[in-house]
Amino acid sequence: MPTHTEPDKWFALQVRTRWESSTESLLAGKGFETFLPKYMNRVRRNGRMKDVQFPLFPGYVFCRFDPQDRLPILVTPGVISVVSRGRLPIPLEDAELAAVQTIVQSNLPVQPWPYLEIGERVRIQEDALSGLEGILISFKGTHRIVVSVTLLRRSVSLEIDRARIVPLSPSRAPRVGFVPAHALLNQGLK
Image (cartoon, rainbow, N blue to C red; front, top):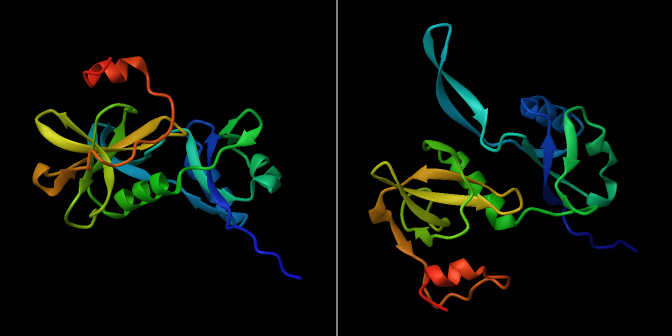
């Protein structure tokens, strides 16, 4: 009798520094579905400016696999560990990974950004990123939307026209969880 199995979840793998591309290639060669988001940065090499790709999340590669069968992952050169809580691998939030994939596929300028927990959540209304949600910030006179991968405590930012975003409805149900006291004070609540 066939059993219904859930599709494998996406997990974050901590990898050796500067081994992200090699490890991703080795995992793909083993038949695993991988995702290594990258961004372009202009650097000076041999006295000339050159565009070079860097990992958007340095030290991490995303991989889809069955957590009960993770030995082939762990023995791959470059892999340090599966991001876990204790010994239990923690899957990535599907919506967060989908948001990062959408940003990378948009071919718009993107860069790593410090993780933010508190800020105004917004949704993009128009263009290829329509429906994408993130945190609105201002940086050097431009508006950016920041999308976070909570499990890694890392974020990416994308420059966006302020006219193309709307705040999320305040009536939207908050996520269940601990709210730090400083967050309540920042909202004027005690």
